[in-house]
Each structure stands twice: as structure tokens, then as C-alpha cells.
Amino acid sequence: MQNSKSAPDYILLIVTLTLLSIGVIMVYSASAVWAEYKFNDAAFFLKRQLFFAGVGVAMMFFIMRVEYWTWRTYAKLILLVCFALLILVLIPGVGLVRGGARSWLGIGAFSIQPSEFMKMGMAVFLAKYLSEHQKQIVTFKKGLLPTLSLVMVAFGIIMLQPDLGTGAVMVGTCVVMIFTAGAKISHFIWLGVVGILGFVGLIASAPYRIQRITSFLDPWSDPLGSGFQIIQSLYAIGPGGLMGMGFGESRQKYFYLPEPQTDFIFAILSEELGFLGGCLVLALFGLLLWRGVRAALAAPDLFGSLLAAGIVSMIAIQVMINIGVVSGLMPVTGITLPLLSYGGSSLTLMLVLIGILLNISRHSRW
Image (tube, rainbow, N blue to C red; front, side, top):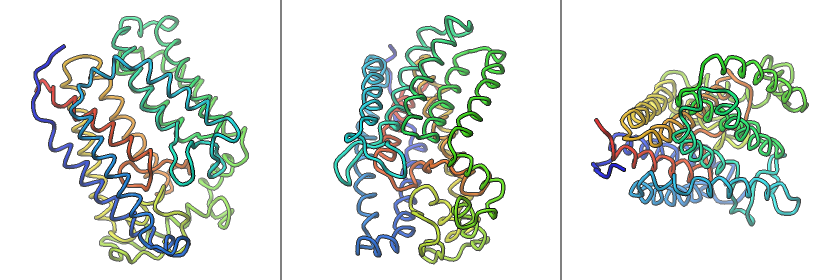
């Protein structure tokens, strides 16, 4: 293994910390009214976000110094632990139910979401497996089928919670990694047809998902029900105009847009900072993804390249889905905006993944 190291990609590091700082500020602005009403403390969510951000940044700097090939050694163990946590969360009395989904483990306010860990665990394992079986991935039975079968088992367990959004991000990330490893396009075409049919089946099997689709197509058909979030999100983005209404001046956070500090934080950001503020955030994400792709292309081995590609694709998919939902281009899925949305395990794990990406960049061949 190549041991020569250089400084990490400082542009990637600075962009990450900039997005995180914007997120902390916007979490406070978006949540202050709700926090004051519910907890009698306007800074309730700010304090927790600062705690999670602090832990995440500390872990990011620590992980940045852990050689990325160390993850390959423990890839199987990490995946097994992730599967165990996914199964554990389904046990009544153990898993916590929030928002209609049994997706959490923990005590009281401090909890973790095992499906978030599975996204990381699957990316690490696939990077190891695909780098060791690259020649087989071009075949369907010996390469592609076993790999996708493992992914779909994890997806099936996540759907038992149910959590379609997180499951879709994981599957999308894995598909990008498999394609990057050299799988045939013809195989993906057939699998794409099967995937679309399966996705339609999943939507049709749950009434609330059908409501999300109908509200996406015509939110005004049920403005106080399934279409409420999309309508209120658009009411936030529209008045923002070019320059925004000013920091802290959002109207939609006054109990119109539910829990605006989480999935719909970009709507509040656009309302307060306007089109230019939204474009700045998107530009920062674009810069982060470009530096991530650069690290993937410059990685000294296939494992590092595939792992970086998985991390970058995971971030890109989450950003596209979240922005798509907030702007009314996609149905509501419950996906947070990386580094900006309020969250515990999701924010911390995202910073851990970026720490891995930064270590890969230290071994760049540029």
C-alpha cells in the first residue's frame, strides 16, 4: 500500500466547514420560534446542533488521520454491525417510533438512526468487495446479482421501518459504485426496468406514499393535508426574491412550515437569503462534489477510488432529492440536506464520511 501522504484537500475542508457554519446559523433562525414555543428556549435546537457539529468535526479531523485502507480491514464487521442494528430497531419496545417510522435506537432525546449507519457500512463494504472482484462485476450471475442481492436485503429491512427516502439514497449510492466498478450498461437497463416496477409497487402498497405522489402532482387538491408541506415550502421560496427578506425575517417558520429546521431548511434559507443565497449554497455543494470527484480520480488504488465515489454520490443524491422536494420538483421523501439540516446521527456520520474523503485526498496522485 502506498504510504506517501500530503496535506488534505483544504478546499474540500473549507467548503465543508462553511456549509456546516451556514447550517448552524440557519438551524437557529428556522427553529427559534418553534423552540421558544415548545421548550421555552429559543436556542434549544441551536445548542443541540452545535453539540452534534462539534462531535462531528472532532471525528472528521480524527478520521482524516486514519488511513482509509483501514476501513477495508473492518468492512465485513462494520456491515454485520449495521445489519444487527437494523434488525434491532424493528423489535417492539427497542426501536423508537418517530413520524410513523420505527427508525431510531436510543434513550429519550439522544438516539441514533441505524439506517444512516447502513449507508456508510454498505459503501465501505462494496468498495472492498468490488475492488477485489472487479473482473466478475461484468458478469450478471457471479458479479452483479450477488452484489445487488445484498443491497436489496438491506433495502428490504429498511423498508420494514419504513424509510423509503434513506433506502433510496443507499440503493442509488450502491448503483453508482457498481457502475463505476465496471458493470455493463445493458445489465443496468434491464435492472432499471425492474427497479421502476418495484418502486411503483412500493408506492402503491402504502396509501401515504400515494398521497405524496398525488400531492406532488397537484398539491392544491389537498392543501391542508398531503399538499400542505409543498405549498408552504413554495410560499417560503417565492417571497424570498433575489435578495431575500433578511436573516431571521422568515414568515413561514411561524408554525406554517412544520419542523423547518430539518428537511425544509433550504426553503427558509431561500426565504431569508433569497435566490442569491440559495445559489451560493448550491455552488458550495457543487464545489464540494467536484473536490470529492477529484479525490476519487486521484486515489492510489481502486478501493480508495470506489469509496470516494460512493461518498460523493451519497452526498449528491441527498442534495438533489432534498432540493427537489423543497422546490416541488419531487414528492416529499424525508431526506435531510447534508451539513445544513438539523440532525444528530445524520450530521455526525456525514462529517465522518467527509473525514474519510479528506484522508483519501491526502494520498492524491495529482
